[in-house]
Length: 441
Image 1 (tube, one colour):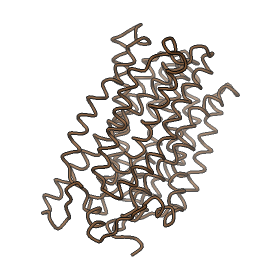
Image 2 (cartoon, rainbow, N blue to C red; image 1 turned 135 degrees about the vertical axis):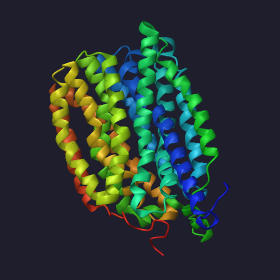
Image 3 (cartoon, helix red, strand yellow; image 1 turned 180 degrees about the horizontal axis):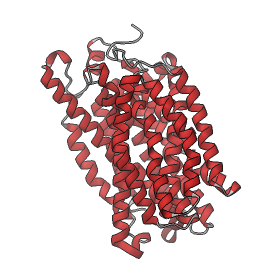
Image 4 (tube, helix red, strand yellow; image 1 turned 90 degrees about the horizontal axis):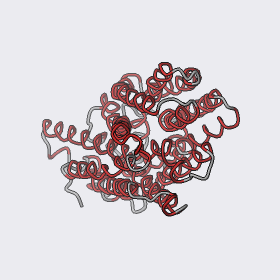
């Protein structure tokens, strides 16, 4: 078992140093994991339909590519259950090392999957299996990275801000994945479809090495140490969390509808829609998503900070309402096919998402008692993947095929916002609560 420490063993300055190290380790590790996960989404929109489903028409090929993409979201709650169990049994640190390896190795192997021209449909089958392992890895990552940062924070008034930094890893991963694809696209030119797209996947093994080095140098959280000291470790945390916190798990999944579904429309579906349907430049869309990611570097921690002032739930409700309206503005701009307006729409698209994503980590994680927190937070967060994030590009593609209008997709986003507004209204808000104590003692 990993070396464990308590608050009592550390001076205030030592504790602050450990908090900084935990936040950095959580954020960088999460950025690496999401680089891997988003890279597949970008490739699904730009490459996989043509290389692994060449006998289909472009729209059907895109649907098939996003079908393999969806499998990763199916894997996420599976990963949440597996790694949530071990995170509540053996600790946050050891579990996070395992999630990084699972994701990194699967992503690296994608670089070597033969296309349809080489081995027929088996190429798509191999992609699907590797995508499942990606999903399992990222399914266990989020809960652990958030807890690694949040459970080192002793100050109630800054916990939302601290917990938002692992969320910051998401736009970092999005930025890195799109930057590398853009760079390789320029470098490989016409050969991008042949071999250039494989390079970003192969490079992921370097990032995994960096992430492992960072995570091996951190200490376990004081909150988990308290669980050990009080002999509160559950034998079957997944079973127990469903018995103790069914409401919180369900609400956590539902409140993510307005955050996760639009996110994957704005960052994955947009590539297929803008490039294949509106015939806009691939590099334009990649550049716009890069800039949107940079905006997120500010708006995610800012939203987490604001939630410390006004409460998690209130900040989340504001964000959910905003995204419900913004979907219509977004597609109104994108459907003009005017490059400058499309660029503006994409750059602004993640702001209403980030208004929810900043406070979301603390809102969900604080709702679960410490000995079940990794399992509960991970399950609630990742179950949204099969009802929101995973189906979103598929639903968006199908809606456009049926109605030939982006406004149909905007209505879908608004419907997701209504669900989230209801769920967030019912979610308990523990902004000022002591999260180191068991809730049911």
